[in-house]
Image 1 (cartoon, rainbow, N blue to C red):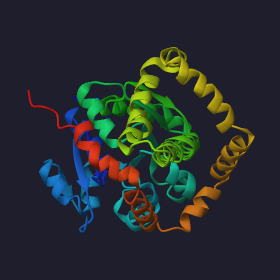
Image 2 (cartoon, rainbow, N blue to C red):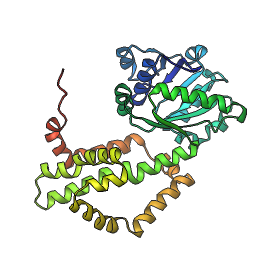
Image 3 (spheres, helix red, strand yellow):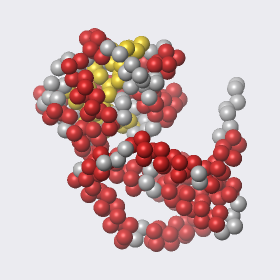
Image 4 (cartoon, rainbow, N blue to C red):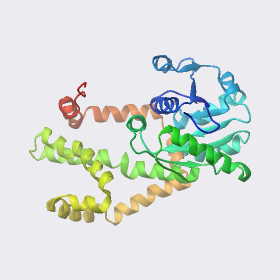
Length: 322
């Protein structure tokens, strides 16, 4: 059953992340209700999952003063501006990432609300499956925007909520700024800006040099998961004890060539843009939807994607029913 003071919860948005939070918290004994826009595509999802949904935010918050803001980060500022009259002044708002707080200074714009952070370090599907399987989940939290006399209370409640969400490692205390900076830099320099592009570069090089696309796919894309699993399970030291002599020596040679002074300078430039806020300024100049469409079109037309489509049924079979 749910522990702590926050039994009744109002959740904004029922996308992938919102769905995972809602299901985990409901399974832990919380009463979760959802606020959805009249034109939201998530109405059918809410019905299918048997979640109470409403377009009347003020009505939902009369019983529950806890609001989980789980729509995309770039929509937070507009949502709060449009709905500030419908959110009572003593409402607690929890963010799953700190980016909108850092970019817009929401705690300064809306001091009538309590702004907290609870950030699981997992994508939505992993958040749900790990909860169901009892697997490990890490997270961070922050109450640094709260006055000192109330901070300990909110820390305690965040820890209760994190446990009911399925967090097993932490949550560890940070600031909104620290979580935002770490999240953005890791995405740009490793998780989203490096891994898929490095895998594609390796795949393309192999195919251009007479390696069958199926073999290139297995080596350059599919094995990323296997290597990542070994890294997580074994840790850095034992991982390098596991890999073959050729992999070990090859990694030593390649790392010295790839991670040269120019690479480190690029990493530092990216870091400076995030720390200074220049990254947010660049994002505001772009259309997120158009950027996503262009990127998907680019990847959809690649030979790597076509090979994925060819092999996915064999590499990702539907689990057999017991």
